[in-house]
Length: 101
Image 1: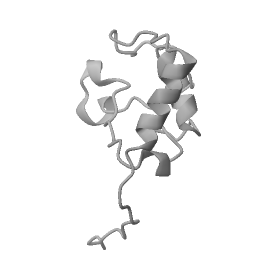
Image 2: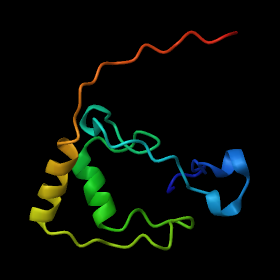
Image 3: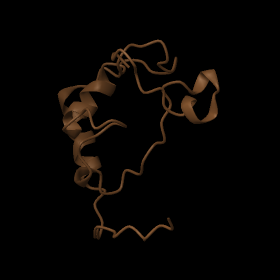
Image 4: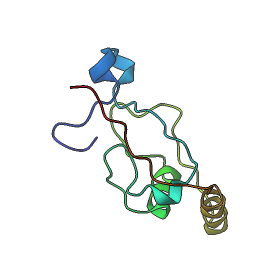
């Protein structure tokens, strides 16, 4: 959201002002296999994602009012990362179906 022309998320599709900066939340399953993170791939590691949310997100005009710093300890961050890494399952890349022209 700090870019000159930020991605306004769901607002572009719906046109509702409160949807600016809103994006679909993906599943947490196999999260460690889906880097880079965020809607635009701007964060390389889960540790960086945890740090971003720990500081309360990136200040911007569309940041949800419920977002606030978490003030996690290093142990809590480590525990959260371990939990996220534990959400691994049997995973095989999917071949996308052929779409009609």
